[in-house]
Image 1 (cartoon, rainbow, N blue to C red):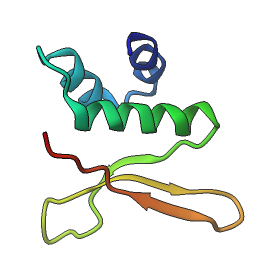
Image 2 (cartoon, one colour; image 1 turned 45 degrees about the horizontal axis):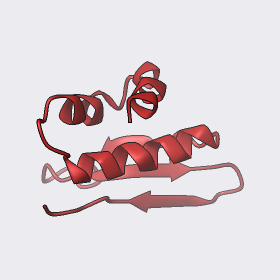
Image 3 (tube, rainbow, N blue to C red; image 1 turned 90 degrees about the vertical axis):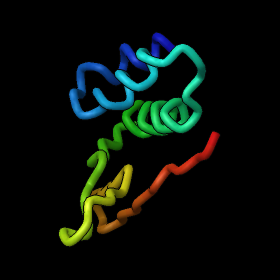
Image 4 (tube, rainbow, N blue to C red; image 1 turned 45 degrees about the vertical axis):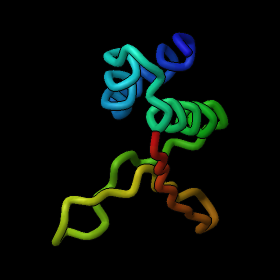
Length: 82
């Protein structure tokens, strides 16, 4: 996991994921999943926007929003309960 966090650290936008994983005494499954997902995307050259507020009238966010060449786009909200 340290290698994944070190890979994500220079991007800057994943600091909340990194902090949440590093500052917990037990495995924080939702943030681990988000770190793995971000790592897989970035490792393959896909740089998503992270924590995007798509509805200005409330504070909820979408975890990952990707728009790639050719008009292909997707959103992902990574939710997990422990």
